[in-house]
Image (cartoon, rainbow, N blue to C red; front, side):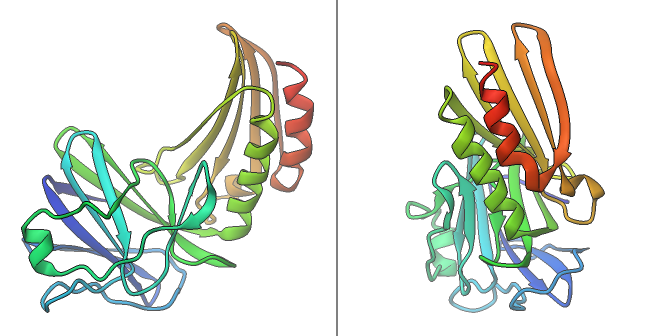
Length: 230
């Protein structure tokens, strides 16, 4: 994970199994190993336009925005795994704080490809700092998470949240009806054995009614069983 003082704009690129973060105005550069190669793009901000996979910006405590640059990127949220807006971003626009077409991505995982093994990048704010984290992951897991969310949302009000700053990058699917709720928790970081498991909790008020750990491939079926508890 890399942290940057705000306001800032950071370009993220993946090359040779490394995630590279480049802060546009200061030129600060941070690298971390992810072990997965997607279409290699080194981040750059020394020409007229930004180059990289994705750019993130944060200029207020409740705002983290992103845009795809030279390659498509995808965000996992209430619309499923869908394309992030893709733009040619001029360096002059960054300096002028022109981010209207960028999308809010606070604690939303951004996938750098739409199939197979990939890299997931997430960003969040803590005080004056923007935290950006990149981990190896798999698009198949994203599809299973969305399928599970599709089942759970039949039972009540749905909420999705990714704690992007944590190394395991946990992703929670939460549904509630009255004072009853179900939480399905997944881990996006494919380097951890936890990414192959899904964790379900059903509760009422402050009490846990049922708790279960299953293989990710069973999550959708188990979700049907848990909504019966709502």
